[in-house]
Image (cartoon, rainbow, N blue to C red):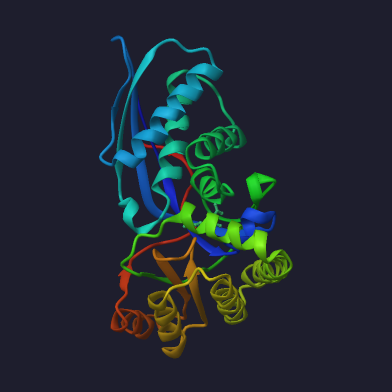
Length: 304
Ligand code: PMV
């Protein structure tokens, strides 16, 4: 038997960094997917085919953990394929981990819930990276747009009607663990100041959740821009990201911010249909690259 599954990448909408410190964030799943094909082998060892070395570590650990947990002795072949490269920071590692667990559960007839897949994937993620809130794993597992609390303590799927985003890539691959550790270092030295920033971000995320649900995008945009200013204060933005955010707002976006750990990767701008082209052009003019992405995508699923 052969199975094929896929899991989506993600975009952080609001709440990055604060979500590592027990505050909520908003994340959406994107239509760039990671595919996993799996089968049981008769040979004596597992076979793993991943185009990117980074992904193979996640596949290897996922297989090892799954086999140990369910006392499985058989060997498997796992081959991955992706719509997106891990360069742009859309979460290929979390997608590959979630897709691997889903594929293995199908191969061995285990009816795992989404929460079980989330928990196992988060375990593997922490094993390899040591840090992280798990927001990306929630997006890969459940899809849609999610209000997420650290470690999956809350995973609320939000019936958000519209999330018209322009996504601009800064041209630089961000080193997420580096930035998480940098913020942690600062936290030791400036705990009071940092706690204040995080709780303000928390309030913005809670307000944004309501405004997105009410389809009040203009207000949601303002909250996103406020969030960006706090990320600047955390010291995780870059000159390029700031320029792309500013250019978007000048070109008529409702709001804009960096998305993710900072230091590179992508920024997002919330835009009306009328302003989309202007905002895209403004981002390109300051050196960004537009990535065409649909949000609110399906979570992990079986492919034909
Ligand atoms: O760089 P990204 O897109 O993986 O986002 C990281 C977001 C953080 O809040 C900084 C870390 C985390 O795991 O939540």
